Structures are given as structure tokens and as C-alpha cells.
Length: 429
Image 1 (tube, rainbow, N blue to C red):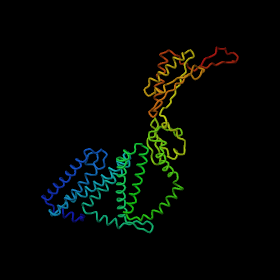
Image 2: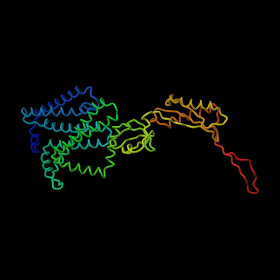
Image 3: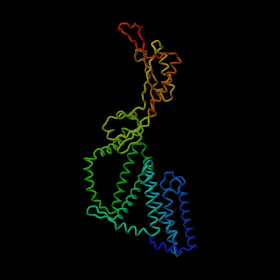
Image 4: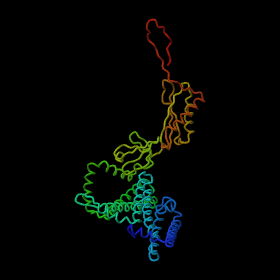
């Protein structure tokens, strides 16, 4: 299929209108058949399907089918037409499009929220289209020959730049296939077989790590790297983990221990030191905890294993909230308790079992101090907001019942005054 640049120019001069029209018609037919097959089999497929994509033609299957049909048509046209140009050009175009679709769809499926995916997609797209253009105009073989002449020295070993690029492409393709398989296993098997979110997380992480390791070993073997040399690297890595990377290794091991033991799970409300919030994700190295005010903490997994962690959701999701109020000594205690409990019961988030309860806790200098206890089942939605709503209802209820809320009062007594200063009655502050 490869031809040099002069051959490309010669074929351009030899193209006639009749042969060009036949090739264009055959190419349109190949694309139409590929689109029809994808449309037929992709009717009930999800929008995140790697094979079909969101709009049928932006998946992996469409460029692959178009590539196969076009290459078959090109081989047949070589026997019938003196010059085949359009179909020759279409083959590398569809091949580049298939490579781009493979990387783009797999990366989006595995890392849907990563901002680095867009950069990787653009880099792969530019590289694939540049390679396709070089292939079409016949400059790819001389470019590869020049890259093969450029060598880099790694100790006593010299490796050509072409070998490095081919190894990177082989490793990238193998890793993409490994990520694709792990994503398919997670969606099709683990979601149905494993109902617990934490166990599904550890299973998917383990499957992905295993497949990536196998894929990397296959890629290195395909490039020509002696895998026996990895034993030396493994020993050096073990020494590094024992000294400099022990904290990092401890965090990774702790992450798998947390996921396996399920002492804390995604969705639990926990308190680590003074930070309280809901666990949104458990990574292999750290855990994300989001507070009610939107702040998010990144907690190393080792801290969750070795430190003190309060799991507020482990046994009971009920969360107790209190608020206090001081009223005048002449107030009716039963009436005040009724107003406090009624203000709490009126809030839909407040639980009725156990019911809100108000206590007279102390005889304060300024009046009778009551404390109101109530419980909510959804502390992740916030505590200050429901406390504020109840305080407003208490204030309105006490004012409607004409129950006095005294201001703090202090009596200042003057024992002696300088000569010539008149005495005044005691001041109340």
C-alpha cells in the first residue's frame, strides 16, 4: 500500500474522471453500508457505548467497518481499474479515525471527569492525522527511515527513535484495550453481581490494576524488552518502598483494607479530627470527604486506619441537634415547652420518633433556661439551616404568646465617691 511521493504525483496525473467517479461511488457505498450496520445494531445501545457512541457514527465500530469495507473495495478495484487513488486515501483516513475513536471513547468511559482526557485526545488526534497525511502522500517510509537513524543511548544500549515511538504506540494500544476490558467487566458483571458500592469499587480497582499490569507486560514484550530485567527493577522498587515510599505504600494498602473491611463506606457521614462530612469517594490512596458547606477534604487512607474516626452512619443515621433559649421567671414552663416542641415538630426534616423534647435545665441569672433536643435523619443536608428555621419559629411562638425573653441585666453598685460628687441610685445595665 505504501508508495513514494513521486508515485503519488504520477497517480494524480493518471486519474481520469470515469475512474474517479467509480471510486467515489464505491466509497460512498462503503460508508453507507457501515453506517447502516451501526444504525441497526446500535438501536438499543447506551449513550456511553464504546462501540456505537452517542450518535452511532462517533463510536469505534463505524470507522472500523468503513475501514474493512473500503480496504476490500480497494483490493477489488486494483483488478478492475488502472489507477486506484480515492480508496487508497480513504484507508489511512479511516484507520486514523478508528485509532482516535478507540482512545477517545475508552478514556471517556474510564475517566469521565478527568480534565486531562481532552489534552490526550487532541495529542492523539494530531499524531494520527499527521501520520495519515504522511502515509497518503508517500512520505511515511522516508520519515520512518530517518527516525530509525536517530538513536539514543541508554547506558551501553542504543535505541532508535522509531523503536521508541513504535513501543509507545504498542503500549498505548494494549493499555487502552486493558482499560476497555476492565470498564466492560465493571459495567456488565460487577454492577449486577456486587450490590455493595465499596466492594464493587475494590473489585473494579483490582481488576483494572491486574489488566493494566498484564497489558504493560505484553506491550514491553512486543517492543522487545527483556522481562527478566524487571526482576532487578522489582528489587529496587521494593527497597524504595521500604524506605522512601513507605507512606505512599501504606496509603495504598490502607485503601484496599478500608474497601475490604467496609468499616467506612461511600455515603457514610464521618468525623475525622475536627472535620465532619460525607464520604463521596474512596480512592486507592486517599478518601474524599465533603462537608455540609461544600468544602472537601482529601484524607490519606492511612489516617483513617491508624487514627480515630467517628462513623456517624455506621449504626444509626439519627443525628441529635440542640438549641437553647432563656425566658422570664414569670413564664409558664409547660407553655414554653409546648412552644419549643411545636416549633421543632413543624419542620419536615425533624424526626417524630424520637420526638422533640424540651427541658428546663437551669435557673440562669436572667431567667429560665430551656434546651430543645430534636433529631434528623439526614445530617448531610445541613444542621444549621434546620436549627435556624426552628429558632425563628420559637421566636415567633414566644412573641405570639407574650412570653418575655429578658435582656441580660447587671446591677452596678458604687461603694464610694470622690468628694463633691453627688450620689445617684444604682444603675441597671
